[in-house]
Image (cartoon, rainbow, N blue to C red; front, side, top):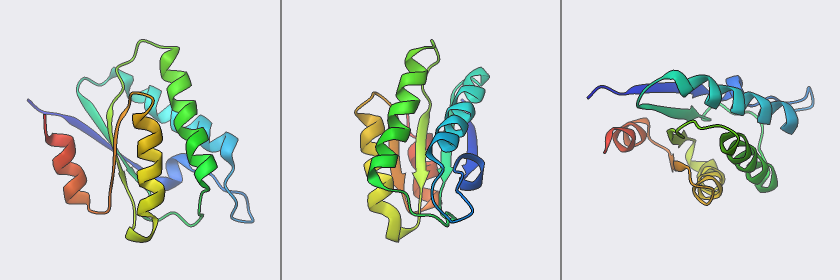
Length: 125
């Protein structure tokens, strides 16, 4: 059965101030908009590609992003997508922490440093 995979690049959901600091409120809104916009697709999955991120995000901000997603999906009847977070090796711990926060809220999220590994995980049943 064919699957829909959406690749969402970091500049599509993470906004920073001119000083390079994360704009958490704007980033939360964009991430939720992307997730909710994909609800019309059947059997869809998401790759969040953070490999070109120019700002380092705190673990607290990662927790808040995962919480915001969870809060918004609880208000709807949407099926949550399987999501792969693709990141550079030096930021893997952050991506893994975000995945753990999301998993604790019932999301199917995993962190990867390889596009191929992320794709294979998404394709697995």
